[in-house]
Image (tube, rainbow, N blue to C red; front, side):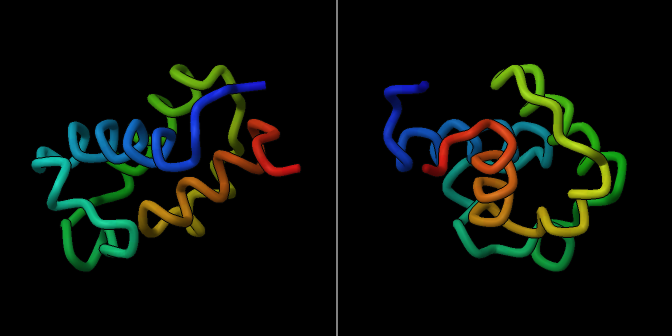
Length: 86
């Protein structure tokens, strides 16, 4: 079980997403839409997924990608697969 707070986890995820999308972390808000606002494509979505899996040592099916449209939803999917939600 991780001791990081939800905010710390969101900040870590934000850093990963920003790096993949070549943005500054403050440009990625919890609700900004990756495709519509940040021009993310499917390859970048897969790269985000792969980095999250590696960092958090979880396996997330690619079938979850359509849900992962913004930072909040990425957190929710990751939390579900990492067992962060009680």
